[in-house]
Amino acid sequence: MIDWVKKRQRILIFIFLYATLFVLSCWNWFYTMAICGDIPVNPSKEEFLIAESTVVIILIIFIYLTFKGHPFFNYSILVIPNSIWIVNFIQDNMYHYHKYSTILSTSMIIVLSTILLGNISLQIYRLNHKDKTDK
Image 1 (cartoon, rainbow, N blue to C red):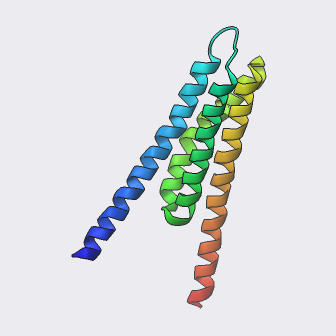
Image 2: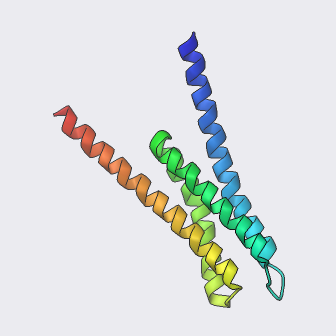
């Protein structure tokens, strides 16, 4: 009975972390659009630091889920926010938005792409290691 409860709690924790991760990734984009959407664009340093601290929190959660989570969910969660940030980055560079907006887009793309490549390489390593131990 206790094992069933622990398994259920672990599943709920992962669901909560994946939901939090998705919400934070989307919230960071909405927040960046709000602070950088005014014409003329002039976000403050405090607003920029709030958005960058969210990037750090996203990175920490993704690192944890890379090692403890499920690869399919990691890929699914990474694809949607990463595509949003790539489009945002292209717009920042095409229209020469404020430097804070460009830095936020660049940092989110770096974090999300690095974690995506890390997840893929970890999954390949695990599959290769599993094949070698089965022989």
